[in-house]
Image (cartoon, rainbow over all chains, first blue to last red; front, side, top):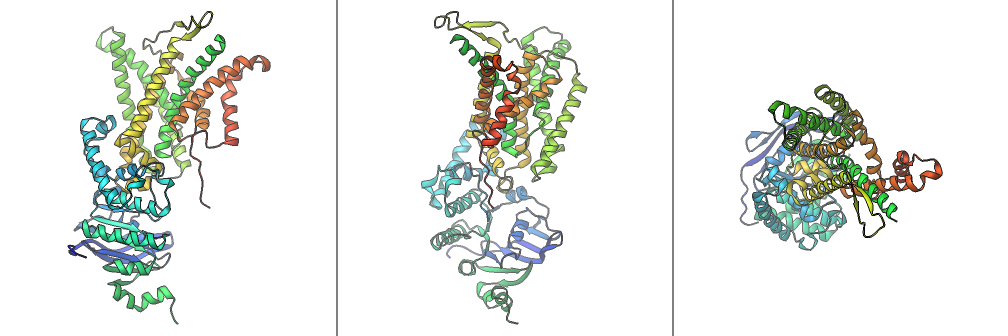
Length: 261
Length: 309
């Protein structure tokens, strides 16, 4: 971990509550994310991890609570607004554009950075064409970075699962986000793929200084790469701290291993 | 042989016109997953606007040039279709993001009635003509190859050319430009597209605009052949078998489906008609669509929908 300095609070979540009908997915959850850190949200199945991420990303609007991004209230934003505010995300069930090539998928991530208006783009006017080439160069950098040069032109639907996850990450990186939200980036991967993904996450955090918020099921992996960890269980926060603190927390141990009554 | 070719060509050309209407369906379905029941109403609305403005504009400006009048009327009709697209997004679709397909279908059914009503209120409900100077007289071709040559309707030929041009430019737009890429992304996954910063509302306006312009072109061509009248809005029904055949998600499918149905109708009418008492042309397309629904519901080029159980 060189060069990276953990800074101030960039994202502050205050008393978030979210329910679907009678199901309380999140109850009064508060935690913050510091600049440049790797922050993990862990918990057993159904703990509310994905709901939490969807709240941050504007997919769900919490009934109560406040989302403060760099000192500004963002409680009512939708996911397009979140993208504009510098948040990028990946999806648990990979939501890539299946019919399109890897390159096209990653290029869509540049959409917000494109200055030429839609009309110019539509008719491929001069500025749009020049811009397209600049973005293409940036995308190639990301492709190199994630070591997916060989599958550049392949339709995403044909790729194996592990590589699709990597393309999902590439598309999010193409947005040059300040905060990267990863929804179970290692789910369903084999050990080797998990190691690769860990390396990429740490490299992104290290080289670009991107703040990373990740959800993970697998305790082992998370403890190795995160700076701080939030633990959820049944929609409630049961632990928050460094990996070592969390590991020693009796509530967390009982949530994961079952309580000894 | 010459007669067969003549029938075949006639079929191809009328098929191209079906394709044009089918294209409107496919564009909207691809980009938003909505089966747009209002496509026929949009054709009628666009054709009415074109027909009436090409009468009104010369009257207002006190000039007598058919070409300029048509160009101006076309420009006005394009602007009107833009406004219609914007209003549809603003007043209806915006509130229906991430809703069930059936809900959106019902919404487009409503839009169809509203467009029919408003169109006829503003523009009138008589039969109007669009005269864009398409040549009406038929021409003889290939006289050196066949005895007597083959007879081709010039109007159909030009219409087919225009349709082909529109299809080619749409394909380039979808495949090569950044906007086209964003459209394809939205078609694949609304949620993902939004969260990487593609504005859904703007994309929908663009799609409906493109569908509106396709409707305008179809309206002009059909309108100049048949006259602009209420029955134009039912040509959408004739395009339904085309989309079933070609697949709802495929632009090339719409074209090839249209051609197959055009040719099939004409050939079966001429060669099978005498044995069953004629009238095949009316139901041929629907029969073919039924057969496809039974054996290949995704159409020739559509994506097979595989659900995870």
